[in-house]
Figure 1 (cartoon, one colour):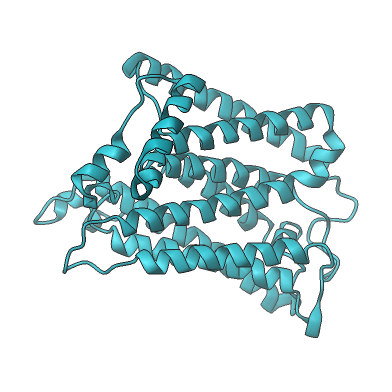
Figure 2 (cartoon, one colour):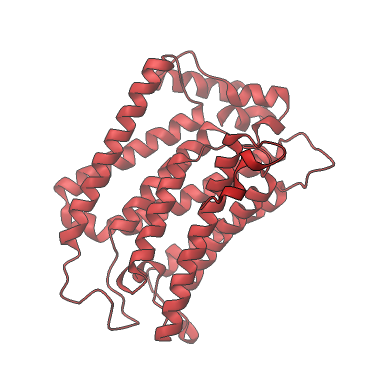
Length: 332
């Protein structure tokens, strides 16, 4: 919460409102993660038992914090704007996935019993109405955004990467909606797992995008180079996610340790490490676009003269024909 003494207007040098908002968003996500971690630690300390997966804390006294954390993630990712179209679309995908993961639980825990949510309670009774509420909110939000952009920026388009990520997001939403309508039981069983993998995959893609942009920055002696750190974190997250998905099949508990929970927590901590590093690095700027060369800023800000599939095909040809060292920047 902002206190009177914290506002930019009370400082000797006024901080732009946009920068203050970005700082609050970045800190807010870290604080939300800390809240979730605290809830789990308190739960484990009280029961002396660790659930088989982080998602199983839906059924524990940490139930409310679990849902609030994921909904908070979704809200923050919808609001946050990155340095490229691709990053924006990936974070929006992560936001949608976070909302579904929050509202559609996975199976009941097997390790720690009894659970906080009574055994006889039918979670599907509350899942469908809540998911439909999310659908209504997404349709309303995207409709208002479309109308606003159409009225104010009729020629607005996206980069090739941003367009592909946006189309993938639309595909995910349509498939999920069809499953919700026609395959209700399948949706209740698999939606949480699919949403979790999508959210974490979007996290990883975002970190890779940031790592590439950080490598392209014009170097300054007064700034630390974070590009290598971001790249290492991205690959570490890839390895951890593969391990999590692979272990979800046998669900091993070697040496009495629920390894899925450990690896899922590690994956979240890896993303948190990236997010905190980015918060420190970009404390004085909303994004890193202004740190790029003029040529790279132009590539990143380029807008196609066409929209839809025609614009996407044009942009993909532009990416394909670009010099090897410029292809990814043109794509983003």
